[in-house]
Image (tube, rainbow, N blue to C red; front, side, top):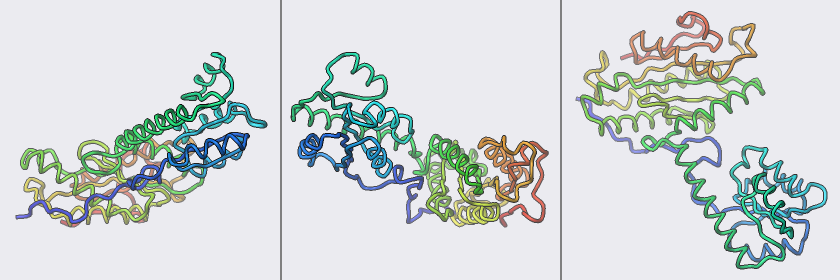
Length: 352
């Protein structure tokens, strides 16, 4: 009898970009922005052992440095020639990648109206000039500690706690981003909707603990089927997974679909109520948008939700065809009747 096998390699952390990968703790980054070189030297000496430091003496250089390495904290002089501190803060907060970066204003202003305006724009704190070393250290350490805690919470929300792959929330964000990028660049984009066959009966027969182990092993097999760092595997809901494949046309997605089917079959997990195979299998719906997609009058109005709908419809085809197989569907077919692809893009079928 087949039994649940334990993989020697656990699920690898999904790759999205450097901010979301599981890596050793890195030194936090502070960006100091002040047109006064003396103030930068003073703050630099004071904070040298607190975090890694970068310096800018004007707003434009600060923006460039921030885009090169996203800082964990910005200390910003309110009054600078050219781009003022307020103008720089506005530019930073208009960019989503800096939305969670705390900014402390360094200012000689003490008026309440000044502080209210800065707080409303997104600053988190003030340090008055001339500043006290002990106060600067205390506030900088406080905001760095809060930033590290917030980053940990965001990472937790990005990863599914059971399987170690991306969470539903992270998948939704990634799909929206990759869809916009693909539309701008003209690159293909494919999406695999994957469902563990007869998983409810598996849980009922073998128990919840065994079911959780099954999902972990399936997730590991899906990650192993991916070929590139940009590919994303996510747990979508219960026994449902998604695999997002940027810059991948239908033939590449078809190849990955076969790898998914073969990888899950190779787990050799017994499931006596999963007929006719007798082991845990998956059904796969493959949706794609590439340069061979059928022309459509309102193609400019296509959205990421259309790709998701096409993958869901293809998954339905695979299940109705007997499960343990994959079916393909062009995104432009979402409004038409469900049907298998023609011989130029044959439906995939896993052999039992």
